Image (cartoon, rainbow, N blue to C red):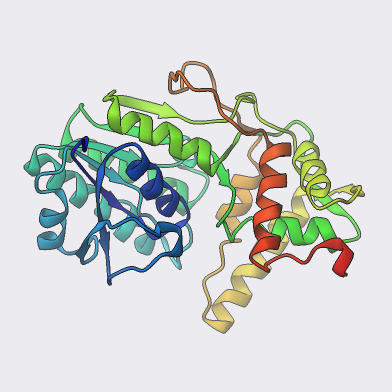
Length: 316
């Protein structure tokens, strides 16, 4: 018996694809917002209802939310040319989904980012905090906001570069040894969000794996190297160099007309010392996370190699 209809934005993204699969497994009828009909091999045997349209289409948002018991807003930009471009999706999109969810009478779960805790660091962080505020203004205090830290796992093409570097680079860079970085495997993030869909709980919650105090940069790089079967040579990179490389990346992106995720704002996020999660921020949960970074990175590398994105060492 179906739990009812759950509507999902951002269903074709890294987190969204796995969330759709988990919601089906949990007994929901899943409806998604997409710009075109979707055939996803990860959804073999599943038939989500598809509403054609985007976040800027009020009629599509009305169809998406109509009759849905829960709306999960995952869609968002992680890179953009400007603050205004971030805001169009991350702020105005969140507001418009919240308004449609409110009108339809469903519950709303907004998937934000731990970066929203520090909105002064970057345009991205500011837009995620702005999206939280806009959604709360439109929907009210019954809103559920989830702030994941860095999410990794099968399907994440942003983290692929880390494992390629761990496998082939002569050394791996680390930043300030005092920095702490909370992380979560995509399947653990999905499990937490799926649990919230079935167990309504209003408020603002952070996610993390069992290391809520976060990992050091050395731990992250060591785990990445171990996942690809290498022993890392680690070198400290000074703050000034990270900032200079970010400015160079922005200049190259402007020259070639391609959006880069590595901006001066992203550099400030990377250099921020405290991306840990306190007990008071955490989402109370009954199911412990399945993965730490050692097991999670190893499983991710297995997926990258199976898909041909990462060559196994014996083939080098």
